[in-house]
Amino acid sequence: MNPSSTPFSALIRTASHEQHVEAETSTFMSDLLGGRLGVDAYARYTEQLWFVYEALESGVRELSGDPVAGPFVQPELMRLASLERDLAHLRGPGWRDGLTALPATREYAERVAECARTWPGGYVAHHYTRYLGDLSGGQIIRGKAEQTWGFARKGDGVRFYVFEDIGNPAAFKRGYRELLDGLPVDDLEKQRIVAECRRAFALNTGVFGALGEEFRISA
Ligand code: HEM
Image 1: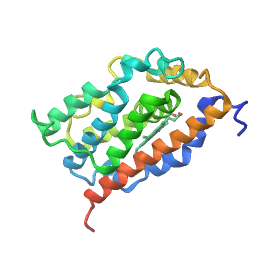
Image 2: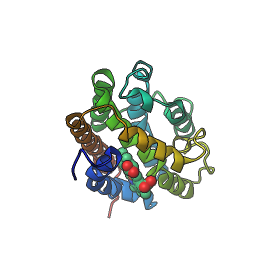
Image 3: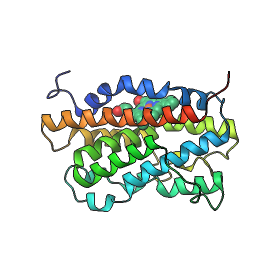
Image 4: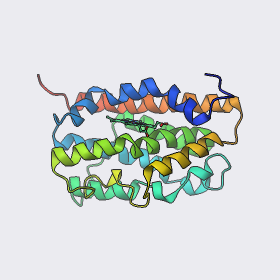
């Protein structure tokens, strides 16, 4: 694909497609969505997400005026409060006491935090990888989780996947792709952002790998 004539939203989507399939079909995700794992595995996964979203969202106010990352910082996307409600439901009121990041999660969260601090374009790559995914495949995960572990529809346990303030996800995603297409950066920086997106996918796959080790299904 010719980077300068292809809309950036299409470029980043195509460039990460293979890794998307890899993430989707990872052993942990397949087992989780196939209903082969207990709610404990889902809770452990949700805990890992807490570290990632803490890194994505805690220092975000400083980025809101940035010409590159600023337009992406939208309150209706923020997930940390929903994750915390889910964790209180899954683990109980003391959920913070048992919260630990796997080494792969720590690596992921540290990279996100580093981008948030030092590289707005890199932050956009991580933002895209998580939030556009949550608005898309996240909905499939929510449905499976409700079905498998009996959470109330869009209720406690799956609030992370429920974007209360986004009435029309398809329209929101269109607007998001327009933001990507209008990013005020040159082609070289676009390539760097695509590379960071691939790295973001690899970091996710790393977390799935570690979770897969922890929740191995005995044959
Ligand atoms: C089993 C798990 C997953 C399923 C079933 C799934 C499914 C999907 C589906 C159906 C779409 C297309 C939505 C559309 O065209 O509007 C999508 C898009 C997306 N997913 Fe996933 N996904 C999964 C895991 C992941 C993971 C782990 C990530 C990364 C952390 C991710 C990131 C994305 C992104 C960034 C998009 C947007 C692509 C674009 O249109 O630019 N997904 N996913």
